[in-house]
Amino acid sequence: MDGPPVKIVSIYITGFYVKKALNRAAKEILVSAGLRRTGGRVEILEVLQQAKMPLNQEEIQAQLDRDLNRTTVYRTLESFIQAGLVHRCFVRERAWHYELAHNCRPLQCHPHFTCTNCDRTLCLKDVFLPLVKDIPDGFIIQRQQVRIEGLCPNCS
Image (cartoon, rainbow, N blue to C red; front, side):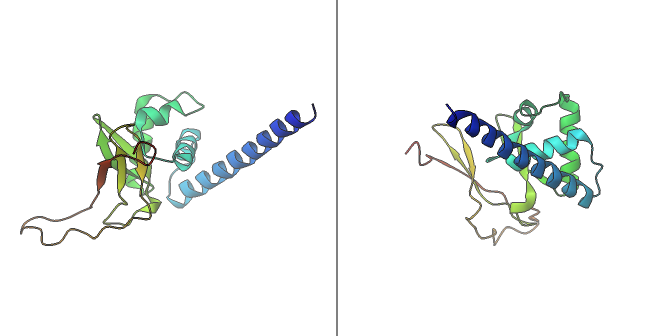
């Protein structure tokens, strides 16, 4: 009977240290971006740091420990976008999806893959596509984003 309590304690301690490290990193990121370190901002940034895929505002809000209203979450995300910490990846079902901007270059975001069967969207951080060339006169590319659709490895 000694095994399970030790495992639970070990998992708790590991989770505690991971949470503490995320909290410290989030605070440092906010300070370096010139943003105030409010509890809500820190927690929203922690959610995005832990995310394995882009999240919409509702998904971010559902993962928060504190009760922040939609307007606060929206304004926080907008301040993160203005500071270059977060970017909007794509719109799906009329909702923007957000992720940390550190995996993208100024003109180009890494591609995203959306499975047409299970509806999950995954980041393809190690896939690089060339920037569009030979675009008609008068168009100015400000940012290139690519979303690929098909079947993910679990569904194919």
